[in-house]
Image 1: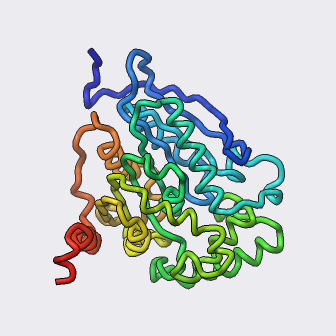
Image 2: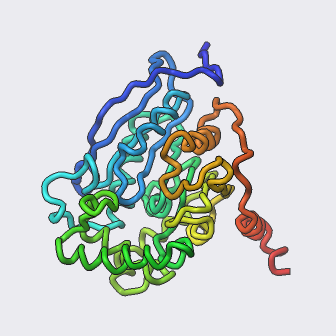
Length: 331
């Protein structure tokens, strides 16, 4: 009989790994596994990082989830963190490669290691967009989105919008074309980004993801995968997130026509803080409140959590109700 007490915390075994994409890029990651060899973990989770945020920033969360009986895989996209090999200037692929090849390879690695388990994902930031483009989208069981957004500049928080537009949509493309990549590290603006990834982000000046013939060629097939995602989804937003305020999540979630989603919102004041921001999901001690929410959603044996710091997004509640009852929405 398996001894899986809801309040039990397991020791965690970390194992560095590498795996290859179908276009022969080598990715590096880490498995976080509960150290109980006699029975399988309660959940399987792949963590997808935000653009320009190395996987090491998600290791504390991954360790927390593994302590509570989840097998967790973190990894870096090609050109980022531990998956950066040779010169970043040689990387020609863009965000469509991150979605189709890199996310796809990580999901296949997880499924190969635990073939009989449901496949779950935690996606932070723009990775909530990328996960919809994976060919394995229909295999996803449950999702958690932290600060989801599409990178469209008008969705930035109103207070920070002019500065973010200047930084990411004027300076970033100019510096990227000058250096052959975006030198985010030296500017203390996250990790260095491959040229095409940086220009993809900088190019999000229109609401539509496809606005040119080149976009049509690169992204049409990937966007067609979004309707295949039918996972039970929890989306969490922070009110002072400059990149992804709650309103930014609305645009992202609307792209998933068959997603069954609960969208919860919180604020710094709910935790007695002045600021949380886009990385508030990852930083202790407040980050653990988000990790608990994710654990309850994804790990069947995890106990019920304190919901007092969060409130439902009423816009999304109405949107989900209209999708479920289209006749009442028109009537």
